Each structure stands twice: as C-alpha cells, then as structure tokens.
Image (cartoon, rainbow over all chains, first blue to last red; front, side, top):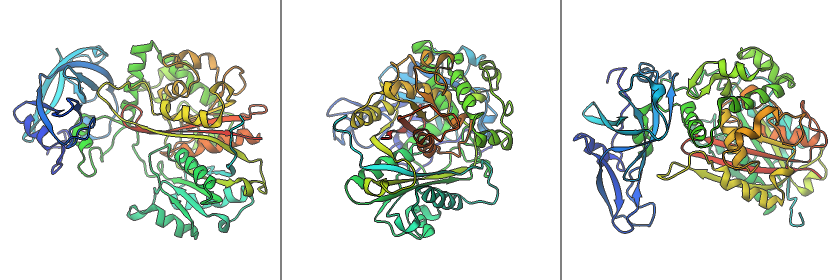
Length: 136
Length: 401
C-alpha cells in the first residue's frame, strides 16, 4: 500500500465482509430483513428493527442525494493531505439507506450542496472498490 | 418544585490552572486536582468512597483499577463510563444516583490529560487515522477522511441548508466565549502559552470569518483549542454536604442519551434532545429559568445545536438566539454561556465535560470571573464523540439553596 492510497477496510470483520466482496464487481449491496422488511445499515448480522437473523443482500442502483457534506481543507494523514480539498458527505441512497462517502470528480468543491443528485463512482484499490459518488 | 430532591451536591471543585504541563502525567494532574478539590470541600482522601473516572491515561485498559491504587482509596463504587467529553456529566448523574441509593456518600470525579504536550491532532486527522482494530463502522467509514471537525461541519452545513443559519451567527458563539475568556486570568494565560490566534484579545465576528477555513463552513476560530489540563469534582450526600466548607451546589436533575447515524435521521438534532427533557423534568425547572448555560463548545455548531436541544429555543432558531452577544454574562434575557471562556477560548484537553461542572459551580457559589449576580440555577450539558454521527449527551441541572 502506497502512502497516497486511501485506508481500506480490514478483515476478518464478519459484518461487512460480504459488502466489500461485492464491491469487487462494482455492486453496492445493502441488507433487508426477510421478516419485517426493514433496511439494515451499516451491515450487521441481526435485524435492528425486529430481532430476526434472516437478512438478505440487495443491490442498490447507486443513485442518491447529498444529505450533507463538508469540504475538508486540513488533514495530516498523508493519503488525505494529498487530496485536499476533498468533499466528505452523507449520501441518502434512493433505496433508503444513508452512507458516508466522498463526492469526487468535481472541478470546484464549492459547487457541492445539500440535495444534490449523485451516483456511485467506484475507486478501485488493492483488489476491492470504494464506493465514492459523483454528480449525476 | 415540590418533588425536587436534594440527595447529592457538588461540594468541592478544582480546575488545573495550566494549559501546558510539560513533565506532568495525566495521573499526576488527576491526583493533584483531586487533592485540591477535597481541600476545597474540607474533606480528605479517606472520606472518598466512590470513584468516577473515564479510565484515560491508564495502562492496560483497566483505568478503574489503576486510579483507585494511585489515589490509595478502596471505594465501594467504581464507575469508568467512557463516552467522550460528556463522560463527566454521566459521572455526575451516576454519582447522584449512587448517593441517593445509599451506596456512597462522597464521590470523586477526576480528569487529566496532556493532549497538547503530546501534540494530538484531535480535530484534523493524523498518522493514526484509520487505525485501531477492525470494526463494522470503521470498515464502512475509514476510507473517506472524515476528520472530527468535518463531522461537525456536516451538521453546520445541514443546519444552514434547513434553517438559513449563517456563519456570522455561528461566529457569535466564538465572540461571546472569547469575551468571557478575557475576564478569566487562567484562560488569558492560556492564550499566551498556547499562542492562540489572533493573540490574547477579544475577537470580532470578522476575526472569526477571516480565520483559516478548516472544513467548510467551520473556521479555525470556531474550533476548540487543544490544551493540557484536568480537574476534579467532589459530590457528597446531603448529610456530608451540611458540614463542608462551601455552599453546596445541588444536582437537581440528570439525563443521559446517545445518538448515532440513522437512515432517516436528523443530523441537526443531538442526543441532548433526549437527555434534556429528562433532566429538566426531574429538576422541576424549565430552560428559561436558567441563569447559566455551560454548553459543550467543541465547535460553534455544537453550541447552537445543543442550545436548541436543551429547549432554550426552537430547532432552527439557534442562530438568532445567540445573535448580538445575547449570551454574555452582562446581558439580561438569556442565560450566560460558558462564562469561563469554554473550550473555544479557555481549555480543551480532549474531554472538557468536567469544566462545565466546575464553572457552573463557581457561578452558583459567586466565584466566577464573569459572575452573573445572584445566579441560582445552571445547566451543564456535555456532548461526547462526534455530533454529526455517533455521540453521547448528558444534561445536569444544578441549583443552590
């Protein structure tokens, strides 16, 4: 891993392993409870709405909206210092889950705004893919 | 008011005066502070039968063991609740509960940190970012560079989007706390020792807006300082409090809560919205009766959000609530905010919740450097962790006879 690579998930980590496995095929997966229909995010073994252990993985279209964001202008971690200024954001996916990510592929970070439509943009690194987002 | 109980009172306080403590360990700061807080109460080590400490600064992850031995105390109650900067409000809440239940009579709360001397990059990442053992949340969030300040900045951006809050309104919080800090000799010395910008002087809204942007929309002067420091608080039963040296400051109400990201969650509402009604309800008082509001000021947006959640104004109205220096100690019609100078301008060694209790106590004793005349009721609200994702909140209502 080069100093400029983003930090990536570490394994074994049983709750999130299947999510990251799917990213290798650029699939954005989330969990739905077979018994109550609730969406579980972040990934877990159990349903956080009822007490079921019967969860199924679904594929998201990777389209959503910026719930909120910030333009990061100071970070001493080498990989992030390299990317300054970069945009950190909570993204509301259309299927109903909210994930943390970056908004990438923009010339001017100050154009990012709450309510902006975005779609997933995969960043391949170290054998898996990180789901960033770019303006739709 | 008829149901208000007076089971436990703050009877001793000490705030470590220095913000740079080269050569000192967190344990030494805790012990010196504990001894002086006991002196303040007229008590000694042997009177203490309950210890509350976040377990920081101890080796081996067994802070409760280390601190009891270090103090040479064999307590009947040990509580090492560690939920970030609000841990000390949780500790006060638990001490009140434990004393009311008869499990303890003298509780000692301690805090010590050398965050500044260790050059901790608390707010803006560092070489350790993305470190620690694998966890579900870590695996989903570690790749995106969410610094502490950018997490809070995301709350500010959403608050601005939903309610039209402005950077000028946020800056009011920094201006008011700096105004109070300039009246506090220890805070003033801190500005010199820590070389705070723009020097040891009052600041204006323009100063705040012209300071460096760290994570939009939050500027440098909207961020708490990183200092060394610590302190201690002694909480005693009504029986003990009758014979201590200073006016007892009663813990009238307490509430605790946590919050975390949810798929349809509102990032502009904190755990305080859950803890505050419990605390005010137990105390039988309302926010508009508060003379003093000690509100965790890690960043300006923290204060704005918490003032709303504490019930001082409606959600979204925090910006206009703080405008025009309304929360200065010498203005009427609103509570005095963070009269010691707060984390923004006095001290923030990483977890400053203990100082919310010490300054609230000084106000109710009449000992503050920005004293509100005849202050009778105070609220101390700690927020620990990250306001824009997972955090804890605890509300303590304090009053004197």
